[in-house]
Image 1: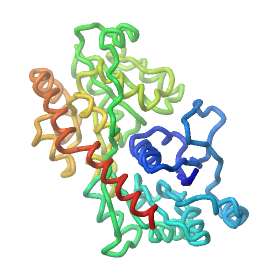
Image 2 (image 1 turned 30 degrees about the vertical axis):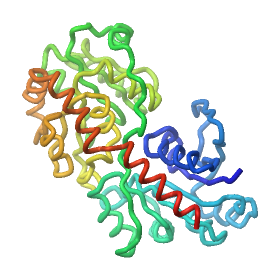
Image 3 (image 1 turned 180 degrees about the vertical axis):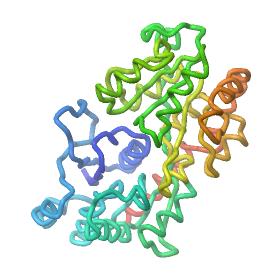
Length: 364
């Protein structure tokens, strides 16, 4: 069976919507996949026909010892998420004369550049420039990635959003709420993902304080004991539910059956955070599962107002008004959210475009 090597920057990207789209496309085209990442000892069990997990390191030492091994000849192509995997993937592509596909799910420029050396980042960008196809997750990010990687004006690019091509089944609303101690008739806001100042962590606290009847379900990633303890002592914490363990991508999406409002706040100044749009997995999750959103105002979120599926806010003081506005029109905005996902995000159609593009590359 023909195989492709797909390299993930972060092991927790396993199962994420864009990577799920890549794996499904490869399977549809008749390819099995070896998934490479820095897998951790507590990595959740994963078993899928045609998929194997393999280890990799993102270092010059690993590259020097491994890229020349004949085992890489077995792969028909290499694909990788940004940014570190592109250093190895670019060299593997050149040495073994195989096509390379970049999934630019992150654009590490500006204040989001990280601590990698200039030499390493140049190697990563060189790998990006070798790509036969670059996939970004928001149309506004096309020019960002071209500028950051130094891609030629005519280099092929495609947009695939942070959305599952096939939506997970909705959970049972009453059962989900009862298992977390949330009243059946409560208005529930969801905060999903990494909690930080830049992602609106203080806004979560403000929502609890401003809205005395609002419940908040926090599906927080990498929540340490100190932060959990502080959250449990917030004003209104009796209406705050915190998941004890990291939820799988599928379970998180299914749990949206219990939610009424999603929170999508990005305050960071790095270029990619000023152009989030459909790159936001949480935004795509909320809208696709019929949950209207409160989002920080930026041009890439303008479609939220056009579809009337949420409220854009300019500051933390507007949280209460936004909650009340959505609550007063909840049924209408739920339907609008689904319409927006179907007509604007368009994950099923965009997946077919992705599959066809990958098919053309693999046939060359």
